[in-house]
Each structure stands twice: as structure tokens, then as C-alpha cells.
View 1: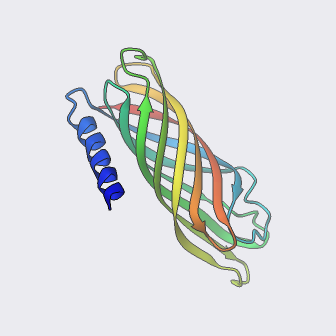
View 2: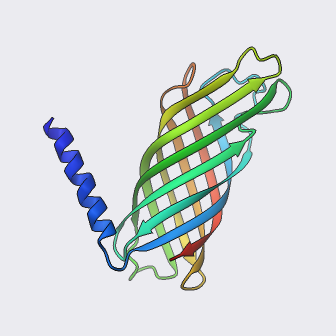
Length: 189
């Protein structure tokens, strides 16, 4: 019980320290992504999950002038497990939130590297042509990422990111794991 209380106090302290800053900025980044090295967590009929699969998403970050921020990200990968032989359709949708540690603004006005850790949920869907091995599952996930914002002006920049997503429980036979690289245009408010 005491540990849970400490975690709640720490989480609230981080939240209020981030949101109470007068210099807090909201950064919205629509992005294109590529999933690689994916292990789907179930029998991959097309043996296609490990191949590259494109997707897209959006990230919203709240940053301060200091080290700490928060982010939320949603990514959608259509045909995430499809080789289009035995799998009729598939998709992976992830939504996560987490804490961001970034270089303070005074050190990185143009380039601001960051690392983040978080948790969320992944919805996995895969339907084979005979409808024998249908997967339609939602699992909790843990995420970790590194990246950087490169600012071209006061409001517009570029964000690159490499994110690792792993399910907290087995999808079917094992955990879902994927590496997701992304690049997008960031708008700072």
C-alpha cells in the first residue's frame, strides 16, 4: 500500500510540475512510421510480420523549458502482419502515454534530443482467408523511445523517433514486440 501511495505522489508531482510551468509548450506531430522486426505474438501464417510495414500516427507532447515533459501517441499500421497470401487483412493500433526526458531548452533551441518511457494498449487484428486463425485482441504494452526535435522556426520543426513496443502479456503464444521508426512535421503551440 505504501508503494502505491508513493507512486501516486510521484506521478502527481511530475504532472503538476509539467503543467504548471508558464513556459509549457504543446507540440503536435503527425508522422509516418515503419514497423520492423515485429514478433506478432501469434502464429504468423504469411511469415510477414518481420518485414517492413508502413503506418502513420500522431503524437502530442507537453514540454517545459526544463528536463521533464509528458506525451501521448497513437500509431496505426495497416497490413501489419499481412503478406497477402494467407492473411486477408491485419492491423496494429497502439495508443500510449508516458514521461519525456529532454535536453533543457536553454541547451537545445534548434535540436532537442529526448527519451521517453510509457505504457498503453495495442489492438491487434489478423484475419486469414479461411477465417480459421482469427486474432482480435487488445493487450497492455510498455514503450520506450529515443528521438529528437529539429526546429526550423519558432513553430515548425521535424521529429524523428525510434520506439520499441512490447506487450505486457502474451497475445496468443508469446508477447507482441515491434520496433517503430517515425518521422513527422512538428507544430509547436
